[in-house]
Image 1 (cartoon, one colour):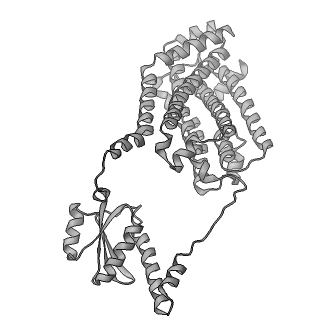
Image 2: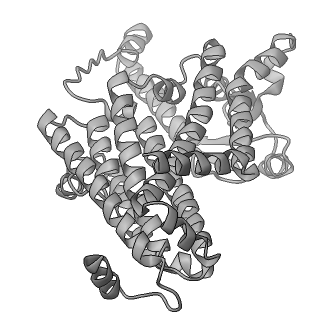
Image 3: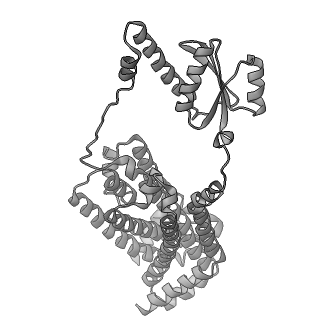
Length: 413
């Protein structure tokens, strides 16, 4: 235990002295602070501006041959397109096009009749829904005119068109959309941390071996203490970094909470339920440990630093497989499909798969318990096996050994 404590302390000091590690942490905290304070900063600039706000809005032109229709469309479009300064024009089409391409106006609607229009815009964005909104608005106008023409009074027609549908939703399980964002952030954070710190563990082990320092370390400390010390140090360093980043984000969010208003995405991220946060920590830590052990074990069999990426590719591909399965299932909205259920009990994919199912679906408690138990046992078993591979890998120099040779050497050890 004394050896383990010394190794753990030594590795943690290395992370604390690593300028890149500290610099990235500070940079991310500052970046998050800027994002969280952005609404407050913009509010300060807006508070002193008492000018006409319509001047700051993008201009939308409406052209119609019938002046009555033009006035009616302008009035209705002004209510539908609140982000635009809607204006009537009688300019020629060529003039309107020139204004759009020069940037003087944003877009224009040229009415070709009661049920037809042409939408002019410079660069059509894939998120531009203006034509859809205009279609819906004009359709309502046409329906109202048709009802008035058939003998219905304007008041009755307006009442029919403005009828409100009262829809209520009673959710008996999990709201997938509400939990989607922090689930995605956890999965993505696990993805980044495993790839980043897994590579750091692999580089540390391979560097010691290439400098022959590993041979001296093995003679003075047990391999299991060395392996667990290195991996747990990397895990603690990663956890400290994540706590600093997400903790600062939580503090900055609470300071500026009133300025974010009803932003559903931001509010859902920072209002994660406590029990789900506990599950996130459990699966996050166990998932990191199991992959860090694998990275450390495989890198101990490599003689050259440039061979690390090739050696750890199978582990990286295994993790990417689980990551892609989870992301595709979340996108489809079906996190309880057969593949996700199988991945929930495989230790290499369960940290992502089971947590996603817990966050976005209803999972029986015994399935969660089985998944965690399998993951804990597998993590400890892989840790012990990795220590044995680490001990054998000290004496393996030259070409990268085959899997069969490693298994034989570990079995004999």
